[in-house]
Each structure stands twice: as C-alpha cells, then as structure tokens.
Length: 52
Image 1 (cartoon, rainbow, N blue to C red):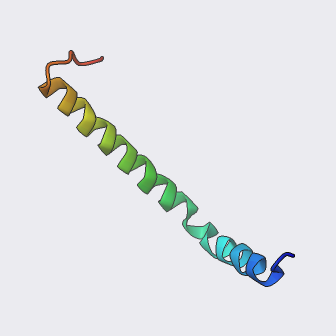
Image 2 (image 1 turned 90 degrees about the horizontal axis):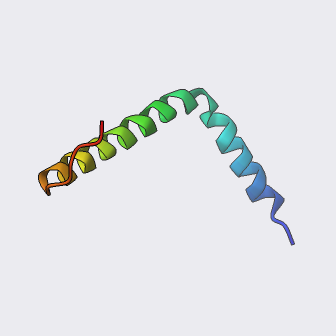
C-alpha cells in the first residue's frame, strides 16, 4: 500500500535542504514584500488611497 522507498527519498531530500532553509525563507519574504509593494503602487495608481 505504501511506497516506503519514495517516502525515504522525500525525507532525504528534505534533510538535504535544511542548510538552505534560512536563505529560502529570506527569498520568500523578499518576493512576498515585493509583490505587496507592487500591488500597493497599482492600487494607488488606480485611485485608491494609500494605507499607512
């Protein structure tokens, strides 16, 4: 029923990525803030008041 080999491969992959978790977190936050900033500028251009 379960493919333990695939589960072990996934667990090994996650373990191999642990040293990069902090960099991936920073990249995620940077992308999120850039997206929100872009949307804020777009809404301001469309006439919505900026939110402090």
